[in-house]
Length: 387
Image (cartoon, rainbow, N blue to C red; front, top):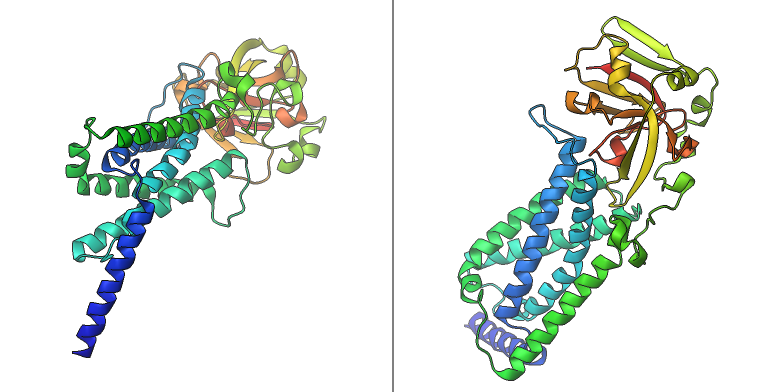
């Protein structure tokens, strides 16, 4: 009996506190219609970000059955630029969505049964995973890693968590979404407030995208106020992610005895830089498009990888692996499938912008190929072999 009275009293206090909170937080823009409008924009941003992120991931870690296009040459600029832009756009959308549903966290009773408890748990998981995902993704664009867990693996795992939890959440809320998908009639005050809120949200999304996407797309470069990279800034007009000092290759890269070994089966040749320069040269304009979202186009001059493979009688269908002078690191080697290895614009580049490569850009020789991430455009080459 005493326990029953305590439960009744606690319930009454809980309902009263919840009612006061709901009244204090009431706002015409906090409606199911607003939540649905913001939610569908956020869902679209998440899905685009997820798809382009998977493309980037599998470019770096392809499965044996996968095929990737070599055209257009700036394909990775487009996919990764969109990935970073939609990721940044999702930040104000996510905050707006949380603002519209925040009062529901204070409903009483907090749990109304087993299914409701599971639903709230999944919503908590979705919110937590989404916040960590967008926050760490933004930090990655600045190459700042204050956390101890590995970014790339964690980012991929959280992306699956977000998309999976989002799918379950949409399924659970589908009746509400359908009911409020179309524009509803509303009193004038509520409609104006909701419209004003959506204008603020839309303006915030446009601002964060326009003020950062200039690192990816040249047409917006003059508006690039907050992105960490500036197009055209750096040695030979190209930004640098990893310097020769950081890669610990200075001595090996500047050694006069350096050679590039090209091997196929039992055949191999070792070419000095002057011997590479004496071979037929090809000049191309290709971008360096990095996973952090920045892209810069440049003029490259060097020897086609296909021509080098022909020196050791490699067949036209042979794939190749290039190896850097870097002593360690996940990108010390890079694999080229046959389409990339024999593409006429895939070069062992010796010159950049009409000058010998800067040491930080890969001197004495580096790989440059179309439609690939910058981390796979291996610098400070020492070996090319068929695989």
